Length: 350
Image 1: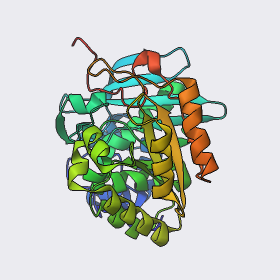
Image 2: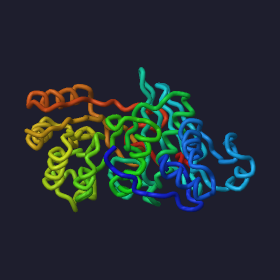
Image 3: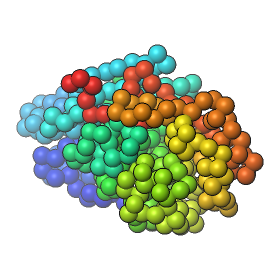
């Protein structure tokens, strides 16, 4: 991975999860232990799932007692909901009592985790449950990595893909997201091309991400080819016109050589008409990109509807006729309120 660690050493009494072998080696040496214990600690953190340093049996008993109160950085499962399709939504309780959601999505030969990057979300997208609950804080790198390890342990299956599409706007928490990407790649062992970061678009942040020249997938939530409608759906869009956003995305493609995936939630009678598809195709013509259509997943707070299957297919047909790469993603976990746009930081009624 080309990006260098953003944290060169582990601070005293800070959570250890998310640290690299080099960081952990430096830390154990600061504690007066031999360097090889850094590799041991790394193995127990990322492959044995240890939750307390006191439980690392290969460490000297006396030293285990001395460092027992150093936080590893693991959460606890506050609530777990299983959908009929096998998708599991977790409410995870963090060290400060905050609740964050993550989702495990199993399929043939793969296990995808949808991780959150913030407690709540400040973007307030009109169709999204997370934005209705407001924003509390960014997640630290260990709190992001922990979500993946928690799902991996619960499923007893290796995680193959991670999508940063849960609660929050990842590019408003860039430093911790980059640190988590490094750890998921180098420490947990997930390939960069199996990591996806989603954003509604924050001015200059896509360009900054491109400078790290990662091989991850960038997914940009577009949802409308028209500026006026887009800012109705995504309030922050009024500060970042769609023309500027797409120009920055083109820079991303030029710098990284990686295509951009455009997420587009289809809302019946709002943004799912053939003219919307034609305008979207016009915006993306000549663009190294892919359109991922997502039929709307209902939430209680608004009255948007999912388009009919015929309307969805008609939208697809228009894009294909315009030679735009397109696919339809039918979200998993609807029964558990774990699908795209349905995440919230607590169970309804709490």
